[in-house]
Length: 273
Image 1 (cartoon, rainbow, N blue to C red):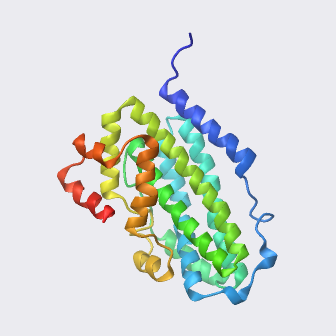
Image 2 (cartoon, helix red, strand yellow):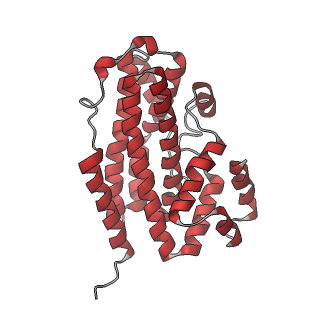
Image 3 (cartoon, one colour):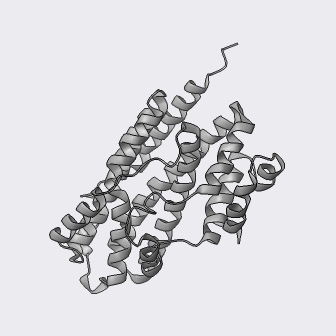
């Protein structure tokens, strides 16, 4: 009878499974897989430009996401190497959004230089200081990003924008995979320490916001005016509740376990409204 795998081994195996699927089924090429020759400038609009620019600006914080995230997970081989792969995939997202805006003519190189200076004038810091809380945060954030990208793909399909549809198809698949990986890690954490993990998850839910909120000027206004954002209800129905279901818990257990501090119940209730 073999030894029971340790937490480190379980995380490593999950990371290797993620790598295998990514390499065999999900890899995409920024230059060869996007139908750039089908760009149609008649589909350009100010609203679309703001939407894609906002997504791109969020991705431009990758140096912070990558370096600060690696500091948190450095002691776990599986998580550290997953994070390296994650960084590569996220870098492609920022690049493909940038290429779309420039190649379509909606933004110039000079305008992007100004955007980059604006983004790099501020530094993103992790919202939580422990690995497990960051796993909980990442699961919700990746799920929200996937939902936002899926929504934009649907809009691109309706508008007949085959280039943008392809872009959101590829980046959306990546985000869905990231969401799935973090949910798996939370499942492993729950098996190790259910009460502690539930407490961390409840805390993260109560304080959740997207990474660029507070960094990009007029972030909420940008999301609303461009249609890039998702509603609180959609977040709850299509991200939070599916995440809880996948990892094997629900809001009732969070409350009954008394892991949600009184000050945190209002934000959680607000999300469900």
